[in-house]
Image 1 (cartoon, rainbow, N blue to C red):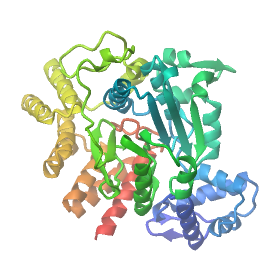
Image 2 (cartoon, rainbow, N blue to C red; image 1 turned 90 degrees about the vertical axis):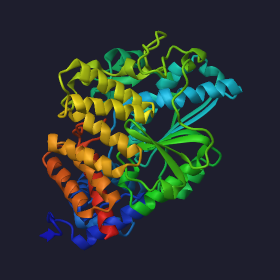
Image 3 (cartoon, one colour; image 1 turned 180 degrees about the vertical axis):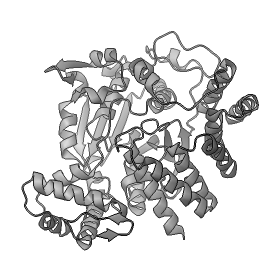
Length: 485
């Protein structure tokens, strides 16, 4: 049977699948458009078998009518949500977060004599992100006992939360970290698991929370003012109206100077939620539009005033790193995994490589004019340097120069036509420019490039983004084109 462009497996009637999709969207905010109905049907069939509930169609009818018992709802939530996570997913983002958000915040709180921090990992899955934050705070706060801390992880998946509370992980969760870092904060159990140290586990709370339900927010966070909320790779699975509602609720729980981090590739209605965005490597940092201050990089010498063993990059890009100690992220990240990461081709010239590194550092510090000048020099020396065009597109987009960003992405696609993420970014830029046919074509090219890849496979240059994540983002963007026609 054919439904739209998808071949529907036999088992559940399309009208029943549509009713199930409406129930899932209403209950959890999760979006399963027609193209994803085969995934929805497969999970319904598998779950009916696993729970010994008989005919899949009968089970689907109970879902559609909202007649599951709590155990069955929890099993369905676990089956339908993406649980792909690991320690230090998006390591470049964590590095930036520590340097430009947590470190200045801690310095400011010390100076004010107000030693209080509230951090929330929303959509925490099995807890790797939440525990990573707890470990970083141990390194940033040698006087942690003097601070009032709350570190919370929330998710709708009770099975994932049970794993998070247990704090026991297999080797796959550590695929991006150094063994020495793992051994410092975890102990080996049964020869194949690693158990997080009890004091770290006890410093973190985990709770069930549905981001699409206001009632859940009111129960869990009635009085909290969060300094930092991480909600990455979560809202992209929501319907646009529900993503907007969730963003507004998250904003309500930010402290006056609080920061909300979402994944850089998520296309979210930030302005409509009353938030302003600062692009950083691998993420967007969002704040209330009327929040005081800025998210500028910390001034030189902050690390020295912090009384910590954590180094912070100085303002001058040519200055050597602090000798007080390694960055908590660089200390943790596996050198082996870094060298194995597929990279964009770069000219073998040492001069070009050094110039590119300088441009990246300038862009990271939002010195965009200087970064552009350096990148122009790179292109003048090596007109085929793909890295330069990729970074140029990001800088021009950050400056709001969409047309030039589109032009730079055109160079990227000419040099690397198989770079799926570039097709996606080109599609989004074209959408913003009203070039709908061109944008839709780029997004469909992206889907074709991803067609044979495993959903768990990392996307080249995606900084932790998986193929499954990117497919969902592309499908959401394509629906955005349709809604604008």
